[in-house]
Image (cartoon, rainbow, N blue to C red; front, side):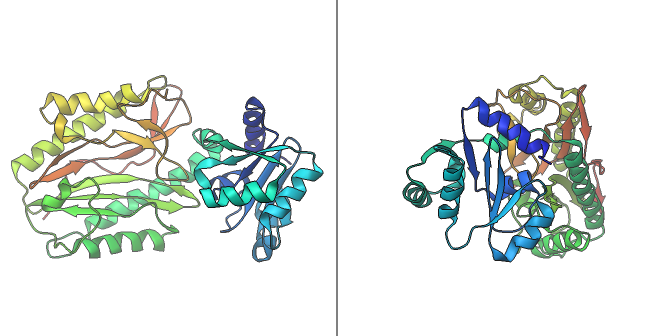
Amino acid sequence: MVSTRVVRLREAMELQNMEAVLITGDVNRRYLTGFTGSSGYVLITGQKAWLLTDFRYLTQAAEQAAGFEIVDHGASVTGTVQSLLTQEGIKRVGFEEENVVFATYRTYEEDLAPITLVPLSGLVEELRIYKDEQELALMKEAADLADRTFVHMLSVLKPGISEWDAALELETFMRKNGASGPSFDTIMASGERSALPHGVASSRIIQSNELVTMDFGALLNGYCSDITRTVGIGNPSPKHREIYDIVLEAQLHTLEFLRPGMTGREADALARDVITRYGYGEQFGHSTGHGLGMEVHEAPRVSKLSDTVLKPGMVVTVEPGIYLPGFGGVRIEDDVVITETGIRRLTESTKEYTVIA
């Protein structure tokens, strides 16, 4: 039985007058086939759907890739692809230009001749923007794990622990609870380092009277979560509380008014205008959010440069922040799915200003 995803891909191929496509990206391969092995190639024509892999994965591929003909590509992947395309009378094949380095392209060009190679951009990624109910259920599980991890970290963070040790405990908790790993390098930034938007964990010792920003996510069943929470340690200053409250107001305002039909630019402005009104616009230098799914950064962007229209089924982050070099910073982030009438939050842990004594 042909999957809905393959049907949609064939429709996209037809719009581009493409007879066949060769999918080489790992994430796109898994999206189309369900195959979780580390090596394989997907070849789709108007009538055929093949998953090419090697001896190590033949049994696994047959179990996971329903609706695909499994082919052992042997010693020559390109030779097998050329043979399959030739037997189908295919004269042009599209390839994923973002996933093929120039040296590989030269090999394809030589080995697949006389078949013409056509570079394609974003063919599968455009399909992945819209999450179906099964995907949303998996993403909710990943978000729930991130929420539980945050709650766990409230009992771990304290003065005297290093950022490295805190990040290790955070990632260990996620792995013990089913994650195959973090969605990305965990950000654990304390004190003045919390002014670094991408301050991955360091040897710095967490101290009293400061903020700690944790930006992390779980990779669970092939899907990512991405959450940021900022907490106080000891007795942070009124200035710390001031910027926290502003960021929280901006984030809650965005969640309240985010709607389908908005452009990424308009959605970004929901948060940016609040922070700018308080005089911190220059200290919010990144976009308000990004798409999320099988990768932690996907389309669409929630950015002042994005004219992409947000539509139901898209999953995006909402993550405004304020960063004051030499002092500290705050970011608060949730994952949300765009619905027909607004949004539904996937991450749900508290964002109330929390101070750990």
